[in-house]
Amino acid sequence: KQEVTQIPAALSVPEGENLVLNCSFTDSAIYNLQWFRQDPGKGLTSLLLIQSSQREQTSGRLNASLDKSSGRSTLYIAASQPGDSATYLCAVDRGSTLGRLYFGRGTQLTVWP
Amino acid sequence: DGGITQSPKYLFRKEGQNVTLSCEQNLNHDAMYWYRQDPGQGLRLIYYSQIVNDFQKGDIAEGYSVSREKKESFPLTVTSAQKNPTAFYLCASSMEAGEAFFGQGTRLTVV
View (tube, chains in turn blue, brown):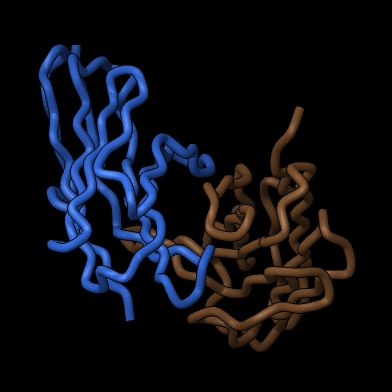
């Protein structure tokens, strides 16, 4: 079974800092890794999708990397802003059942002015 | 606008009652999913469907039922057999092996 771990569970930083959120998974036979953002009481918003053949993806101030062989991904947030405050979730699929996702418990990020 | 619509946003269930959560998508995605989210836990898969008229149990299917009669619709019924249904329910869709998109969720509370 695929297990996903996210570290740290919570992070509180002042505005302007560069951040790294970590995600690890136990089964390297994945097809996709996806990072999501969740605001309190809301659904998930997709941030970045990395296919197993890719090493990284970038969107604005966000950069996600994938090291499939070691079962790790990092989400880098540059120049953090209070509006980045949310819970960030990492999810991977499993090559044998495309589409269904396995989630970590998330990193709760607070960026204060 | 393209997307996934879940309704209602809030739902209250009495003991012994069945309730149905709605999920509709206009993204033309083949696959649809139902997840449950509890405080401090990751999302857990209840049911998923990769094609119309076919669906599979996820990790926590007991006490739930689904149907997939139309490509754009995947309703979830929480039956009286589900002993602890209070949770946040999220519906998602994707093309096979593609990016997953989520609805805004339904918060179910037992009263």
